[in-house]
Image (cartoon, one colour):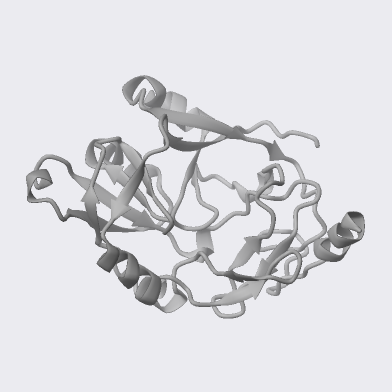
Length: 237
C-alpha cells in the first residue's frame, strides 16, 4: 500500500462517550431522518442504510436532537444513531473549514443543563462524501433508495485515496462524522486546545486498492460498479 504525502485524522473523544438520545427523538430520527433503504451485505444479509434520508438532506433542514444528558466533552457521537454534536467553542474554530453543511441544535431533556452547555449538530450531503475504505479486500454496495455507497466489512483497514481529498481540509464518509487534514489540526492547535480529543490517523494512498468504481474515481461514469465483492467472496471460500 503506497502512502501519499497528506495526512488525515479521524477525531473522537478520549473516552468513548456518546450522547444519550431520548427515546422519542431516537424514534423520530429513525423514522423521519434516516434513509429506510436496505442493501445486501457481504454474505447476503440485509443491511439498513446509515445515511440521512435523501429527501430530508436535500431540504437542508436541521437535525435538532434531544438528549437526556451530556458529558460536556467538546466532540460527542450518538449511538446507535450516527450523529455528531460539537461544543460551540470548538465549532466556532472549525466551522470556516467545513464543506457545505447544515447545523442544528442540541436540546436537553433535563432543565438543569439548559444554558450550561451549547452544542451544534452538523451534517453534509452525499455530494461531499469520500470513501474511507479503499484498501485491499474492501467491498462496497449501493443503497437502492438514496444511492449512497457503503463499505461492507468494518474489520478491513481504512484507506483514503489522495485524489478524493482535493483542496478540502475537513472530510466525511457518511455526512455525519468527520476527519481532518493533519496540517489543519496543527494550524488550529487542536491537540493543545482540546486535550480531551483523540486523533487517529487514517492512511492516505495514491490509488484505490479495491476493484470497485466509486464517485471521484477517474473511471466513474455516474454509476456504481461493484467488482470487489466477487473477488473477496472467492478469497473467503
